[in-house]
Image 1: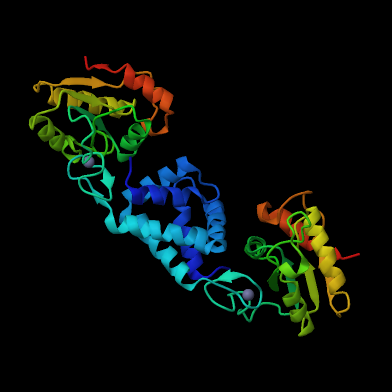
Image 2: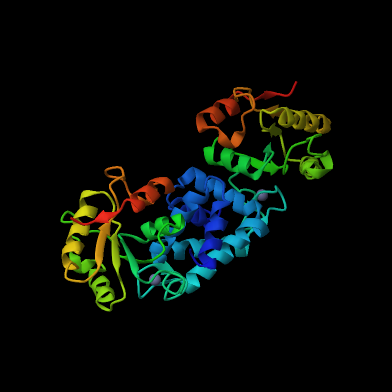
Length: 198
Length: 198
Ligand SMILES: [Zn+2]
Ligand SMILES: [Zn+2]
């Protein structure tokens, strides 16, 4: 069979979401055939990312700079803050270009089942950002799951003492749906119709 | 949006077969979240392969050693030689563990349309291997396409002067089918029923 090095590459690729053993083998063959055109650029891109990768100390985004590109962008609306569960959600919303403000990544959602408590999420850092002032609106963009909504309500209670408008994404989202899987149209609709937390 | 480095990584991954822009983004997010568990190993595996990658000077396989692992394996039957169009076909047949001999990779198939002539393929090197002696059977394992079969017939004519049995994969293969996409059962059937070239 293939050499240990090629086997290791196939295995590393097959662990990526969306790639099984079969497609990983095809990807490896493609890379081996296109050394200059594909393997080289992929290696260079991975190295560059690996060397610079960092968590944003402000929002929890993952980027190659700290603060991340979004937090460092002066054209972003400083007054609007969108709270998401995961970096993947931040990316999905940012890709849609519908939200002009900044983000805050919790790093998960409250879950009794998985033992995730408030102190395990970036909630204290969120409150410090709001306390620092300058924020008019906090959009709670949790997933439309039971745990996501529990998390949103918990945060809404924790921040109701601040003079900020707290909204959440409209429930045009399919029940049980995860932000990261939705098309931009659905996201746009949910964002446009966002409403104050009851 | 994401940093230039992360964009470059997403683009490099999205060019792999089986990964579109969307799954490439998910793969990148996965890598960013699992720096030690996924990004590190993938980078190490790619580096190791890139540093050692070479064409086998005997059979045309791509491997991290020259001769390749198959050509260097003394347990392989030296008397049987399987001729394939592409490295992907060699891997597919080798994975099935049905062929105990060695391989010869042509690097393509004859094609008037694409201007691929005999001298563009590894046919001269194949003839030199047969001339060197010690080979009893040459299995022509071309794809069941018009061009694949044209290539097989061309090679059969070129080597009919040698005292070797020339066979080809049985036409249990679906018409137009490409070796690399077939399941092992179909491959096994086709290999078992291989027949002398008419
Ligand atoms: Zn940030
Ligand atoms: Zn070889």
